[in-house]
Image (tube, rainbow, N blue to C red; front, side):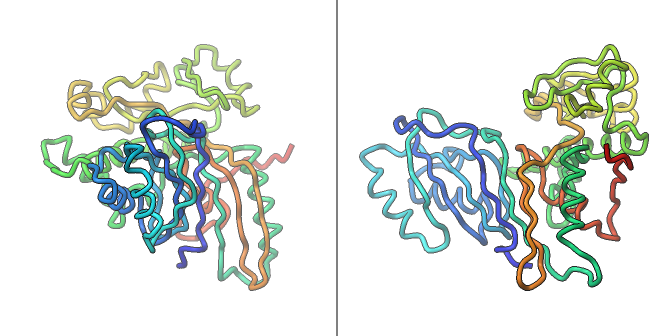
Length: 335
């Protein structure tokens, strides 16, 4: 309802070194999405939009702190920064140089502070939120993309599917957005099936598992051994983000994937033609740096850190438990 109720701050994978061809701008804004700001910075720098680097997309209805890179010549830097600093609809926090363009995914994750208003009477929202979040820290939660991934009208994945079937989209940014939404929908279907089966938080024979904290992938051959590691939160199963170079699951895990995906998801030539390399996405995420605070007006401020590619709205769904939404039942054990 209010952009200032949703604050997100990128946490970089690395800090700019202070020299190099690319100027890194740390910005704060509200009322603009990432592409809006890319266009403005490109225009101010006399660059093409594709020459503006960023690590990920941020929402329009939020207060977002985000870094961009631009190949601005040193001789033009002073004048460019003066123009950027004069822009009324976003704030320049810092400017430093680095050798490389900022690429997609070049961040550790995002720190969120989100205010929840109009709470039900008769509950202790702070205590309830703390209990839920502490549980999510221990057990993890399903790493859905969620509704916001599919656009305002919910049809981005449909548009991506149409592109795979021969449709056209001239705008390069939108084309990738729609195709990635198609990948995301298939992942969400896979994750939903694993939840239905009751094995989303463990591993199956043939799963491609990810080592938590390190990111390495390996094929599960001894289910009993690796299931114990999954129970301790050391590894998680991963689901497919379909593409031409996707690391394939095997055995029972692959059977689950094939049961919920259309034929084009396994057409490697088609996926390569659409420039979709493919990747694996973890079935669960573990929020950290939990913060819960009741404010003077009775609203609750929730703070947490999520790794890159994860969505705060998915965490909020577990905390707020909206009646119209499906909510995952976590294990009953507290030990």
